[in-house]
Length: 126
Figure 1: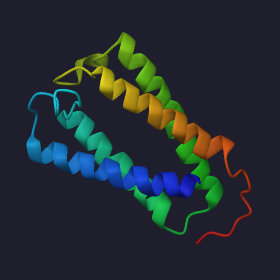
Figure 2: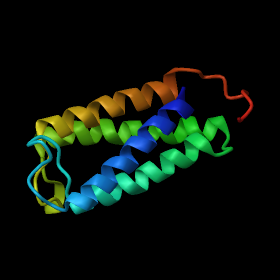
Figure 3: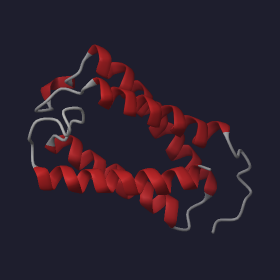
Figure 4: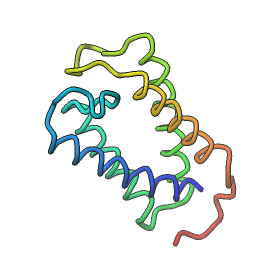
């Protein structure tokens, strides 16, 4: 499950990062999604890591650990976003409620995929 999560989320984050870079730093996308340069770069890096973990021959335990830990970080980011929508002033536009909800959802799914589901780490790597 963690491998499939990494594949799907990795591709989506890569696409989101590319779209954000192409569009530049306009107002939030559709008035709801923040696409600042800092966040675009983070999406590209995290998307590349997840895509690598999802598609390369990497030990399932490693995939599960990274997906779970990133899930915890995303969950905390989503919670923090409601309290501090522009941490450290690094974003051109503060996180929106939609950004926070997406971070929360990805965090919960990442924790589930990484730490709670398919706990058998002896499965052979594809």
